[in-house]
Amino acid sequence: MSTTTNVLVLIPAPLRRYTGGEAKVNVSGATVAELIGNLDAAYPGIGDRILENDGEIRRFVNVFVNGNNVRKLDGVTTAIKDGDEVGIVPAMAGGAR
Image 1 (tube, helix red, strand yellow):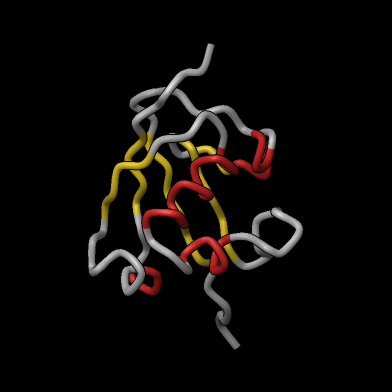
Image 2 (cartoon, rainbow, N blue to C red; image 1 turned 30 degrees about the vertical axis):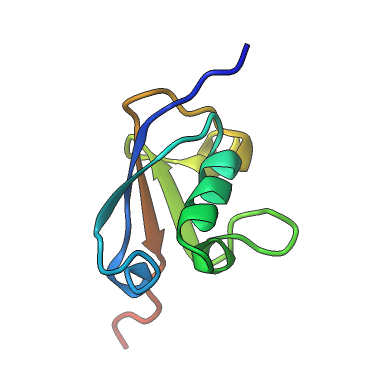
């Protein structure tokens, strides 16, 4: 039995060129990896900005499910439930000198 989830994905400004300027999109997926795959199918090219070739999240990108960093959960295999909110946040470089 497969379940379809409807998840709100928050798109950061640098990636909105892939979503036609949309800051929030609805995507389905049972895991973070599936959700990003479906996001890339709907908005070609965005997946390459989030995931490495091996399917892991890029070093300078953070993905959050309901405010929890998936790196501290189950990574790309983190389960997603209907109604969850996923945020994609590119890490910022720099700081005080």
